[in-house]
Amino acid sequence: MPGIEVEEPEVVTLKNGMQEVKQLVAVTTMSLRGLMAQKPIVFYELVQLCRNGDHRLFGRSGDDLKALSLVSQHGDQWHVHDSIRNIVLSASEGEGMDLKFVNPLAT
Image (cartoon, rainbow, N blue to C red; front, side, top):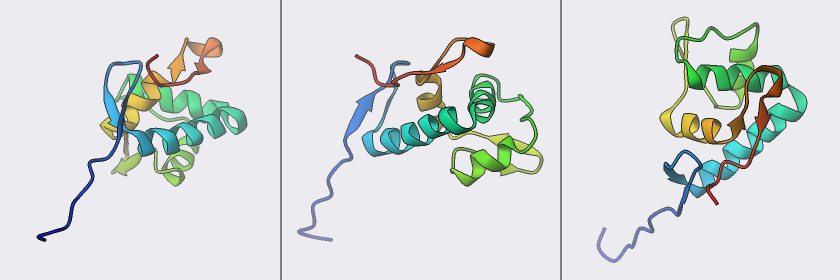
């Protein structure tokens, strides 16, 4: 409509070099921090799914992640939106028992 200005959303740069909307990064980071504190195995499962799209989620992990809007389900497959994947991959370091949550923002 004439006279209406639309502001572009503010973006931030992640550790993996990708740029994402600042608000999405903030909300997703809060969810990831909560997962790591309360359900670390679910955090681990999400990281594995982001690293390998064919990963099969353990137990009710998919339901927990879906409740946080971090994944979607298509048939028996779980999918991660590209923006969420970028944030998760930037917010995780290590493997197995050494996997940890880190600040996803580039410094």
